[in-house]
Length: 236
Image 1: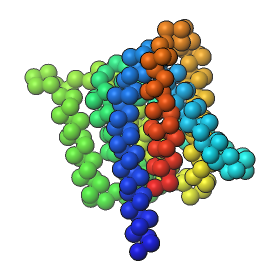
Image 2: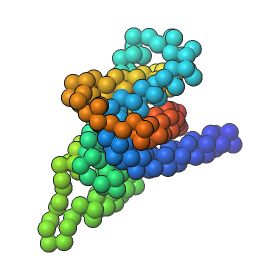
Image 3: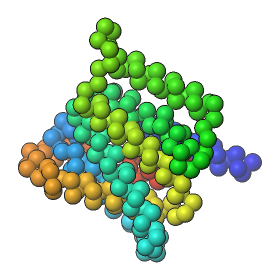
Image 4: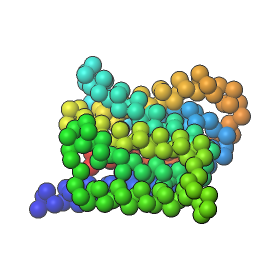
C-alpha cells in the first residue's frame, strides 16, 4: 500500500512538472519579447534556481565531494546546452513549434537508454515514439511543399536530442549521487554556462533588455520551471 502511495505521489509530481513546463514555452516567449538574450535567460533562470536550492539544501551542499561535483556538472553542462539551443531556436520559430519539437525527446530517450545503458525499449515505448514522429511530421509538413524546417526548428530539434541525453544521463546517475546535490550542481553549472555564453557572445544585447517586462517570466522559469520542476522530476 505504501509503495502504491509513493508511486501515486510521484505521478502527481510529474504531472505538475508537465503542466509547469507546458506553460513555460509562452512564458519564455515573454522573456524573448522583452529582448532578453538566450544566454541571459538561461543564466538568470538557473542561477536563481541554484540560489534557492543552495539555501534550502545548504546542509547537503556543504558535503559535496569532488565525485559529486563531477557527476552533477556533467548533467549541468548537458542541461545548459539544451536550454541554450531551445531559447535560441524559439526566438526563430513559434512557441507551439518549439514545444512540440522539444517533446520529440521522448522518441530519442528509449534508444539512447538502449544504446548507452542496455535498457531495451518495450513495444509500448516504440509505439509512443512512432506516434510522436507522426505528430512532428504533421506539424512540419506543408501540402505540396514537403518538409519545411526553419533554422530555429532545427535548433530546437538539436535541443530535443540534448534533452534526451540529459534524461538518459539522469536515469544512470540518479542512484550515484543524492538528488538534492545533483539538482543544485546541475542548476549552478547550467547557470554559469549561460553566463559565460552571454559574456562571450551577447554582451552588447544586455543594454537592450527590458528587465521591467522580463523579470516576471524569469522568476517563473527560475522558481517553478527550474528549481521545483527539476527537483520534482529527478525525485519522482
